[in-house]
Amino acid sequence: CTKCSKTFSRARDLQRHIRSVHTGHKMNKCEICGCSFTRMDSLLRHQRNKTCNNINARS
Image 1 (cartoon, one colour):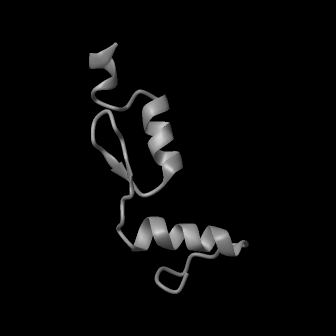
Image 2 (cartoon, rainbow, N blue to C red; image 1 turned 90 degrees about the vertical axis):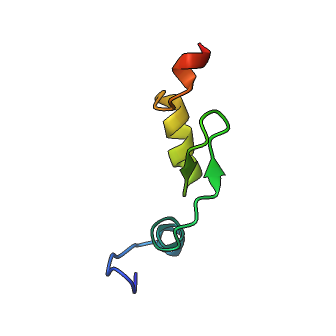
């Protein structure tokens, strides 16, 4: 990465890194609590691990 000197063996990993770390765009929004995430896997982990504030309220 030219911005932080991290290295990646695959170009797609570098692209994902740039999108998720350096652009600041959070395009994946939790429909339950409204939290936003730069990566879909982070959103899914948030929901799966019940770290969403409103999941417990809905159960």
